[in-house]
Image (cartoon, rainbow, N blue to C red; front, side, top):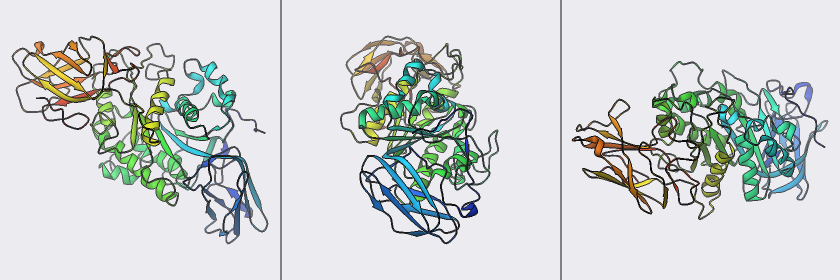
Length: 502
C-alpha cells in the first residue's frame, strides 16, 4: 500500500548521527517501492547501525539470496548484492542481534539520475497536455520516481540532508511535482525496455555547472579559485556526492542557461570535466558496480528571447558539445544529446526560457539512450551534420552525413566575410547566406552578400531563437530530428573533422 504523500512532506534524515540510539537504518535514498540496479551490475545497499554490530542482508522474492555478514564500521554498514535480473517485487531485510530494518515492494531495473537546473526541475503538471500525462501515471507502476530536497553544503556529505519525495508508485497527485523531462524519459524508456526504471531527480533552478562540480573537476578547468554568484561545488556536496554509493545505469542532464553569462567561455571544458568526474566518482563510490563510462545524455539549450542578438545561447550550445557540434565525440564519449532549439514556446506562462513541450525533448533523449546507452542498432538519434563544406566565389555546397529534409530560408545560414587569417567571432561581419537549392543530402548556399571578400566561416542556426516551433529548414529524412547548430571556419571540421571550408 502506498503511503500518502503531499507537496509539503519532506523526510529529514539523521545523516550526521549514524546509528543514533543503536538503531538500524537505511541511507536516505533507500525506501519502500524503490528500484535497485539490475544485473549484470550488482546493487549496493547501505545504511547506519550500532558500532561493531554484525549485519545480515537478505533478499526475498522471485529469487532469494543472503549476503555474507558485515560489521558496522564508523557507524556505517554496506553490502553489495549478487546480480538480480529485472523484476520483482522483493523484500530487503537487514538485521542485527537486536534490530531489523525492512524495505518492501522493491523492484530491480535500471536507475537513471536526472540533474540540472530549472528546465529539468520543470514539473509534470506544467507541460502541454499535463492532465493527460498525469492520467497515464497509473499505467506505469514499474516506473518509480524519487526526488532529493534542495539543500547546499560547504563540504561533501555522505548522505542527503532531506528527501522531498520518497520513492513512490506513480500517481497523478504526487507525480505532478516531479520533473517532467525525467518522468517522460523514464516512461518512454519503460515502453521500450519493458522492465522497471528508477528515476532519481536531483536538480535546482538557476544553477551553473560549477555548483554541481567537485573541486577536482573545477581544477581541471582552472575554475576552482574563481568567485561568482554561486559558490562552487555546493550542490555537488549536498545533492550528488551523497548518491555515489548507489549503483546507477546512467544520467540525463538539462542545464546551461545559467552559464550563458557565467564562465560561458569555460563551458567547453567544465561540462565535459563534470561528466568525467561524475563517472569516476559513481564508479568508485559503488565499488566498481556503476560503469566507469556510464551513459550520459543531455538537452542542448532551447530558446529564451526571440529578439536577442547576443551570442550567449548559440555559443553555449556549441560548448555543450565541447565545440564539436555533435555527440558522441572524441572528447565526450558515450554521451547523447537532444537538440531543442526548434521547440520554442513564445506563450509559456513560465517564461519563454521554460518551454512546455517536454515530450519531444524526452523522445529525443530516448532515441539517444536507445542508440548510445543500450546499443540498439539502426536507431537514428541525431539530426544531419555536415560531412564536407566546399566554398566557391558564388556558392557554398554543404554535404550532410544523411538524407535531409529541406525548406527554403534566407537567414538560417550565415557567412563571415573576411580576408584575414584570424578566426571569425561574434564581432565579425556575418551576413545571411540564402538556401539556393538542395539535393538528397546537400544544400547550396549563396555567397553573394560577401561581395569582394572571401568566405572565412559558415554557421547555422546561430541565434538564441533560430526558428519557430518545429519549423527549422533542415531535418532528417523523417522530418523529426533537427540539424544541430554548427560553425565551421577555414580550418575546422564537421562530424569527422573533415569538412573544413575549401
